[in-house]
Image (cartoon, rainbow, N blue to C red; front, side):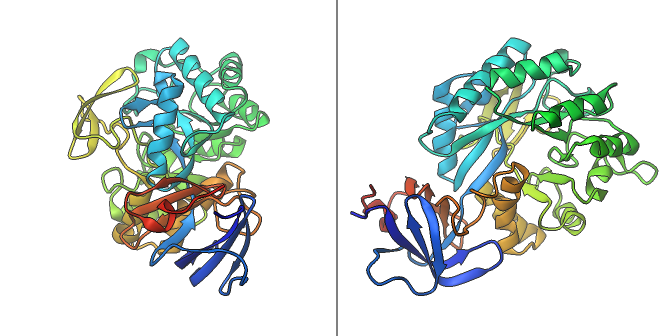
Length: 397
């Protein structure tokens, strides 16, 4: 039994800037203390085998998994999602809402806020992401327009209070009147504003970004696209150097060439992988619910009865794999897009997002086939794949 101090040895250790072969990461009191090639002789070494030690991933846009949804407004659902995400290398996530009636929305935010304040059994809840209510019909996607509402200061305050100040991201359509004032007010609360489910023109989106919005919700999906006479919301996000582009890398939401286009314009620092997973994630094809709408999953692809894509059944480890194999993006950069980039976006880069000295000891152990063998949070394993012995037989304190 170790005493809270040990080395993790892996065939490859992925730091922010480079890959260290046969690297040793010293963990002490739940923090990363050293990253080196030669360990101190009197400290226990846990040899993880021929695997990659990568930073624990952050899914900042996810609705549910394994039959549970954020909109269930139940702590048991939050715990199920937490445990499910840990199986895929995720150490933290934002509980993301979808359009529903106002009271159900507030109830969901209340539970997300409570979950953010407690230790979860798997991936930790980092806060709330509002994706719902404040959109326009043209690019509604899998949102029920009968529940759409104008975004007012009073509604912002109600959501913020319901989740105990843990509202981290607000998605909205910027073509509404007074959107500049709304964006600035959200920024004053420390809330990131993302543009989505919008038919905004290029100029409207550009003005929203200038006012303090900071990116695009699952870019190209649920927004006005690029036309040669109006670059649309997608064009505004892509051409704004500081704007973040959320990317669903399942090969369905975006063609591989479009992933390459986003990478060419945004670079590795402003392209963030999200799952946008719904409650069908981890389950077989069939009929599910997303908010107030029926969703049908066939071959792992979720759609409404009208044919609109309705989130995904994706996991972040598969997203990394797809970026590498489909879009030919370097592995280290793809991993950072699932860890460091989201951490920076959420102002968590001092504690999460990379294997760096003095950050929290949060890791995913992943093989070369992108299969997660174990997930560690604050130095403690929260998931170990059955049969993976280096951690399953170890007793942590």
